[in-house]
Length: 288
Image 1 (spheres, helix red, strand yellow):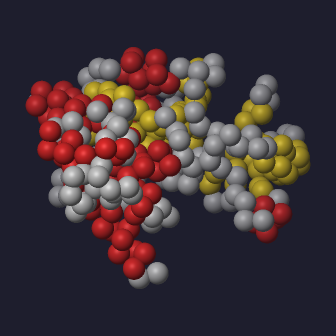
Image 2 (spheres, helix red, strand yellow):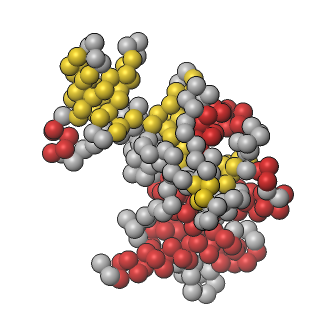
Image 3 (tube, helix red, strand yellow):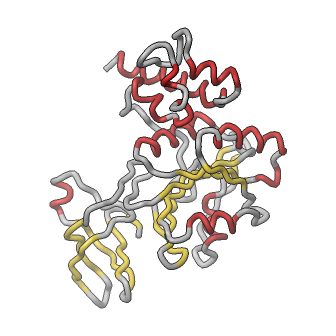
């Protein structure tokens, strides 16, 4: 259910939660239990609910950031305003989820203080990529029922930067949980980190949400610049019509992807982020 400072909290049906350590063999093999893992444990003290994790069962999925296992989908939460969304950070997260073939819902909070134009721009940018886009207001409890329906009978990892309302959303979805919430720093318009570890929370029968720590950066250096375009779903319909095979969609002539950007069929914000990330990955490879 969660792991803190080398202790792992394992829920056993009809018994409760055991506080466990992981056997040394995991360290030797470079394996670490993840929130969401199914495990086998040895009970050391039934009265005190203490145990040892002896085996991690096969995972159907495993993410690195956030570090969770056995999830069905991701819900990425950003604010529309206050703080304004960091689109480069959002795209980095979507690239990671594309790489791991994990369905992702893009959710924007604070619609109660956003303009219709701000919402429309976000919807156009991300729905054209094939992502489901939701607008909610945690403050006014609007759109939360729709989120609840999308989470039903699935295990979902909830992720996003600090200060966008993740803990407040969980408090609405699971009132008995009452996660600690943090204020926005007025100086830099960023939230204080309130979630310090990943934790799985039961919302109903077969329905779980994993709350994960907020992030302000996300490394994608494990992929190459040549791979990058493959993680932009909106490029796929246009790439076959580029003049050059293996087109990078940067400086080549007769690039159908660039034409689609000019036509408004592909989000310019997304495309500009693609160029920034492409250059970043190019520089990384140069100095390795």
